[in-house]
Length: 287
Image (cartoon, rainbow, N blue to C red):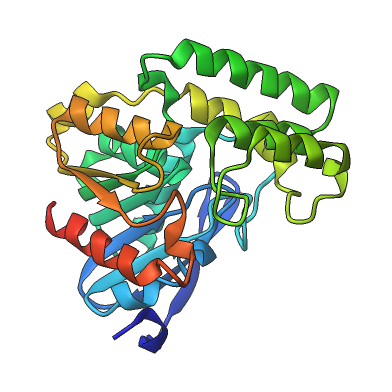
């Protein structure tokens, strides 16, 4: 059975009020609860291809982080990983559960690590997928200097120009599933302000990028808390920055490392989502 053949009915949509915002979440399926944490600028829809198949044997919880999708984001908007983790706790409880398995991709993987540190009592097990925790890398200083330059660019040249620079640095697959080259960024940059689908860039590079790339997971605390963790990265990401962070975290935590098909976001691609889902099930089974 493929993902396209799987249909789940009875999705329950609800919301929970947290610190002045309404967080919208969806619950589907039956079985052990599993919450899927999206990267940025993702929301519950990021898991549209995999949530229904997972609901055949899990109660799957997806949600829109504050300020994204259907959830509100009161002004002034800010991004704090500790707050994001607290939001997940509230969503899990509002969905009717005390504990859940957790999968997090990218920014969501950092939120998962923060949950394992500060809210270990709700984490049944955690799968971490390509978190942007560059501070764990031996060449972190080089990355952080470049991130600082990108942040300055956001205010001096424009957020879309800065986001292109971030994509080039991180080698994320925004270019038809492939990383941008310097030549491609140079060609696009003069027309960056007109780029469609990049409206989130202003919030990301000005308010979200630094908290994410400055975040240092407390791996000792996670180990002490006894949270079961599996770490993974896409096969095409292994030598790229966020594949490297994944391997480093797995080594430091001394936990299994699993290679997923494709790249940073292959669960969103119909061509790879079935194979990706199979590996996620293996990762969950290893917890």
